[in-house]
Image (cartoon, rainbow, N blue to C red; front, top):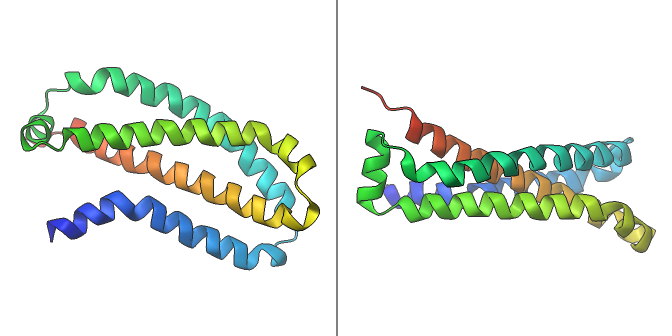
Length: 149
């Protein structure tokens, strides 16, 4: 059972973002204001991921100082490097998402009109994946901070 939990914890951001991207791709033509939605999503992603990078970098410096019972268990069981890896993935994908958000106006000029739908779906997928990576790490981090007596 623990292997199933591990694989769910590890791969659920990828799985759910893939499903969400496929659904978005399927309904892309049916959404009338898709360009406005994508534009607002990219703008929001740019701002939110910038704030999240600051939050995650602060956690990077503080995570080793947490002394809760759960954190001691995580360090003793050898799963602390996995948590650090999840933190690094969240930071890296925030940077990738910000970079793509900044490059989108230029890329929209370069990309042919027939490929715009694919690029928008790709951006949607990257944003959702980044969002889910951050949620995954935040949930784990909160569980480590909150220690039931």
